[in-house]
Length: 122
Image 1 (cartoon, one colour):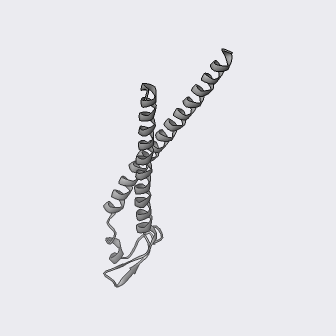
Image 2 (tube, rainbow, N blue to C red):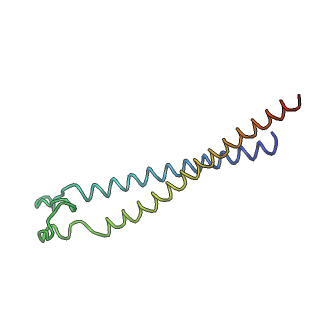
Image 3 (cartoon, rainbow, N blue to C red):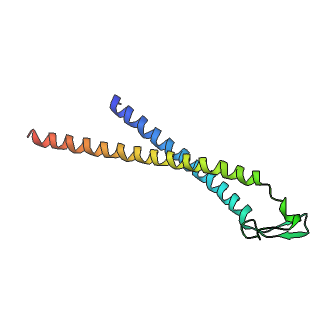
């Protein structure tokens, strides 16, 4: 295999790997976003007895029993993990897709230039 073919193959593999890691990061981030949404939207109960409204839909001043049940740092931690993971995953996926598109475009250009050079010499 020629050196240019090896380089093209290595570039293509790196782009595909970047795209796969980006997709994996986006899937994990989506799971974290769903978990965060679940904690914010679904009603819950305190010690199996007192029902509490969901955090997004409760009154401004909740009852004393429902006040300290959902830890704010847990929600903030989920948000803090999901946001950078989403940005990183989107960046990796887009970078891999663009790299693959550019590689494919370069192959097409080289093919048509070689074809034109072959017909121009006749």
